[in-house]
Every structure is written in structure tokens, then in C-alpha cells.
Length: 290
Ligand SMILES: Nc1ncnc2c1ncn2[C@@H]1O[C@H](COP(=O)(O)OP(=O)(O)OP(=O)(O)O)[C@@H](O)[C@H]1O
Image (cartoon, rainbow, N blue to C red):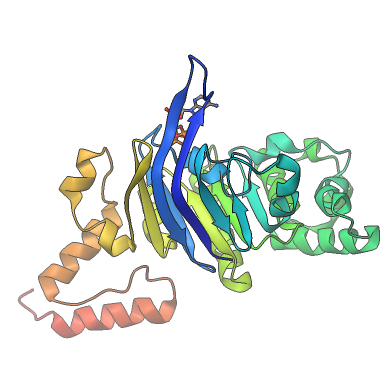
């Protein structure tokens, strides 16, 4: 499902003394199956942009096209319900949205709401609980008896239960320790690869953007400052510094190695084969004097 923003403007509290323009002239496309990171300084409009993807916010002017659906200021919220199924959003601290007596009921809530038969919803819950790295016996427990990290996995299973075509992640690892962060990011990456799930990640971590995304959208003061591959977006450190962003250390190292040895290191080196190939390339260029 391709996504296209056309001249999107969003004003909070429009036509009131508290009016605040959070987005303007946003023109950007996200192709079906891509993994896109949205980065930018605090207040640059990332969360506002993201909330347009499932109709939680509607543009004040312009349009957001998501597959066959076009969201404009005229759409009534009821008309946007089908979109909520196609686009799953994992907000910051999604565990705060858990409310059912058992984990199973929580995961089944969305599908039942969309008319999925109970047996089918329960079967899905058993499949998903494993997919997010938990065991089946968790299903009978109260979500509130789980650890914070486990609760978050349950909440994510609940979003996946609707089988979205697009997964939108707003700082999904906020508050987790480094190991928990890595496990969760790897889980989202696996989902993206295995299910060809279009993934849009809002993050403050330039390392995560560089490591996982095919494309990066850089937001600045309410509009798109840049959009391209990680290589393109991280090419000019000074330009990024001028809008308060920095090139991640791993990318700097990669750039230095490429410059020094005249090789191209695939980015990111995700598979063992890619890593081995990059090392081989480097060794072939390095002489004893290097
Ligand atoms: N509900 C709201 N009402 C009024 N103004 C808002 C609201 N939400 C956000 N804003 C304003 O809109 C602008 C963009 O905010 P947004 O949350 O989209 O930025 P962000 O890039 O996601 O920031 P952060 O990285 O801090 O989450 C900011 O100036 C913010 O103060």
C-alpha cells in the first residue's frame, strides 16, 4: 500500500487563539514494503505526521493518500475506520493501552471488534504471542501481572492481531534497557522482512535509523527537510548539525573506511554474508603498511 502526502498542512486548534501550525507543505511518498525512519529535532512534527497515517489526525489542508483511501479535512471519522485495521500504530508506551482481564482478551479485542470469529481470534492470539517472543501460558494471565517489557510485547501483539499492511512505530523502545531495545528493534525488522510489512519508525536514534531503514525522512520545523537513503541523508554532517542532528558513529566509521580504502561497504551489514563480503573487500585493499 503506497502512501503519499500531498501539500499537507496541519494546524492544531485551528481558528482559535491557540492555533499552532505543526506541519506545512509536506510532500512525501512512502512506497509499499519500505522501512522508513522519520527523524528530526523535538517539535519538528514527526508525531503529527505519523498520526495522519491512520486518520487519527486529518490534514487541515492537502491530502494523505493511503492505498485507495484519501484523507482530507472533509472525511468524517467514521469513514476512516477501515484504515485503522490497515494501518497499525504502536504509540510510545503502548502498554498503557492494555485494559482487559487477560492477555488473550486484550490481543483478541481488535479482531473481535472488526467481526473476526472468536475461535479465529484466539488462534491468532496464540500465534502472535510467540511471534513477539512470549510463551503461550502468558495468555491466561492478567496483563498487569507482567513485567513492563512483557506488557509492551502484548500490546504490540494486539496491534499485529489486526494484520495491518502498514506498521507505524512511534519511539517503540522508549524506556527500555539497551538489551530490550535491541531485541525489540530486531523483532520489528524481522516482521518487516517476513511479512513485507511497510514500516514507518519515528525515532530519536540515528543509529537505529541508519541500521534498519531503507529510507530516512528528515523533518525540520514542520516540513520535510530531506528524504533519501541513509547514505544520502548522512552524507553532509555539517548540514545535519545545522538542524540539530548528527551522523551516527557507526556511519562515520563506515564513511572513513570507505574513503580510506576506496571500497563500498553495504549498509547496513545485516547478514553474515554481507559482513563477510565487506571484510573481504577491506582485506583485499589493506597492505601490511596500512
Ligand atoms: N495536541 C497539540 N496541540 C497543540 N500543539 C501541538 C499538539 N501536539 C503537538 N503540538 C505542537 O506541534 C509541533 C509538532 O509537534 P510533534 O509532537 O509533532 O513533534 P515531534 O517532532 O514529534 O516532537 P518530539 O520529538 O518531541 O516527540 C510542536 O510545536 C508541538 O508543540
